[in-house]
Image (cartoon, rainbow, N blue to C red; front, side, top):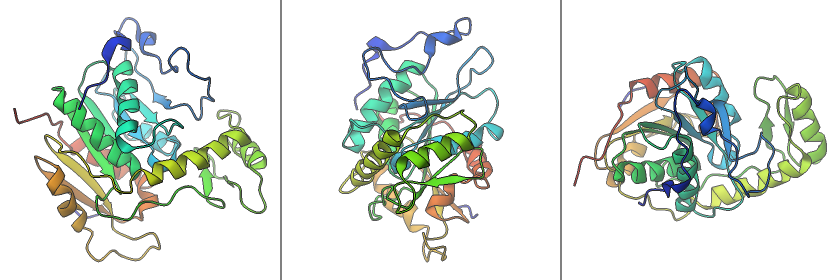
Length: 298
């Protein structure tokens, strides 16, 4: 430890080629309800293009709902690597439902591997399940989970008074607290991001509902058997900031669900800080040193 199945239906997969990078856009499927670009299920952080054609990295938000915090990885990940955020949706109700929904998007953007998966908290369990299915289909996958422990208590959802960060800005807005309406909070976010993000008060109400659903789905979930290896980033401090007594226990608790090696990295951070700007360079380094792994059993 270092300090500090079923594949998705490919009938709708796009045929991405270097000559037609726009053939794999992240637009919602035809017939789906139109959503704000900021809250759509796919957030194209650095989309595939002629020059961005490496193994794509998909970042799963979990009960954080939005994948904005992953935007900072652009400065630390190889510029040839496409990066997409996978955000919460109102429809799925379980980890496996989310895995099915996300896998369809992943295969639409990149019909074939290799793939990279990064998931925080509830999103870590979804990333694990997606990796199970991709490896069962013979794909090579790098999977790193953040603050996801099979035996930990269910995470807390986004609640009144917690803040929604504004990426690239020094300000933030509280959602639904006693002094700030969701309409005012949305206006503050849009102003702070100079119009690059467009959310409404209704968007923020939906985010709180989706966060509660994403947090609940961890309760009682038992991960499937993962072929190949798993990398786990473990917060070295608890939510209150105090040092955790035995952070290595997270690795031991993952071992019954992983065929290969479970590698743990203990970071000097609380669970909520694992996607903070000052921690993202370390997350990027861990991704870069984690090997791509495939199914190794028949």
